[in-house]
Amino acid sequence: MKMMSLYLFLHLLGAVLLVGNIITAAFWKIRADMKGDLAVIHSAAKNVMLADFLFTIPGIILIIVTGNLMAIEAGYSLSGFSWVTLSQALFILTGVIWVVLLLPLQRSMIRHSAKALETGALHGAYRKASLIWAIFGTVATLLPVVILYLMIHKPV
Image: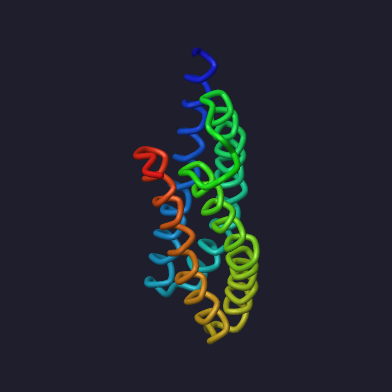
């Protein structure tokens, strides 16, 4: 039982790192965009990417490892349809959105905001990348909230 408590602590720590970072990073990036200061926008774009590597990735690793260990130790099946497998599918979907869409968009925003610092103007390419990032970032933020609900209530 002591290992299960340790797994649960590490799992919750991972969830806090993941969800906390994705919400906080979005907040600061949106605030930077609203301010309109090109240096602040560029700094926020770079720091969103940095925060992903410092907080999101360790959170993901903790969640995956400890979640699977707890499911196995508690006797939950990792196959068939259940709250565990639905949570895993939603977590994978979140990861696909992040890797396929959000990371490339973040790189694009960094490039375009750096160019804006040189030219003195933020161009449409940054705004387009930022809008798409906001839309898919919202989806990638809401999915872990759904997973959190599934973890607590175990409805299926």
